[in-house]
Image 1: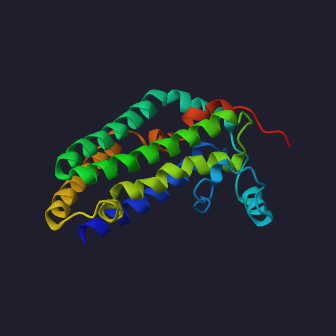
Image 2 (image 1 turned 135 degrees about the vertical axis):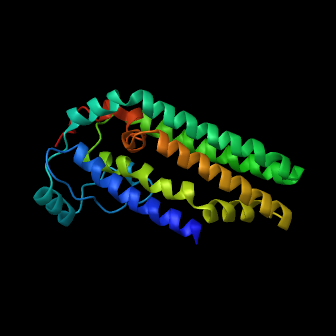
Image 3 (image 1 turned 120 degrees about the horizontal axis):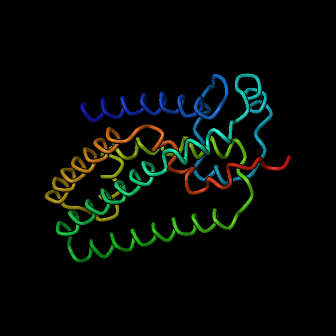
Length: 217
């Protein structure tokens, strides 16, 4: 019950922070868009007519100058947030290793390697594409970190993934749940310690040079 309450509260936080994120980058009031499909922030397709009409009728154009200024203003905090998030993951992996058998550690290391390679390919693809980001791509990059917050605090999602991959026994399951509880608390402490722009802008900071210029019509 406590876990469900935490997730519900974080969902409400994400919605509220998302509303603020859009208002920070526009001149007038905004209505948050629906969640984007995974990877869609890098798909250069025109928005659906209904979405474009809705956006045009309820919001002002994206203020790119203001957004770039906000990113630069908060860059040190954005970097600190991302660094601490990496540290939390490293601490979890360090504490998990002694609980696993040699075979499980090998499987876990292989999965982590695949994940790292996939992230590296994504970063390389983004770096290779030098075209300015569209408004829709920028909005999606703003919202992705907010939705990922739910994955950070949901114990069941991470536990079920680990249990499926590693086939944990009963004793291991109990210890892994304890580690996940500790990891979640560290993440919540991190969220409390940083201002909302640091989270919202964490996906935008690496591509800030693609934000300043309007894409060609």
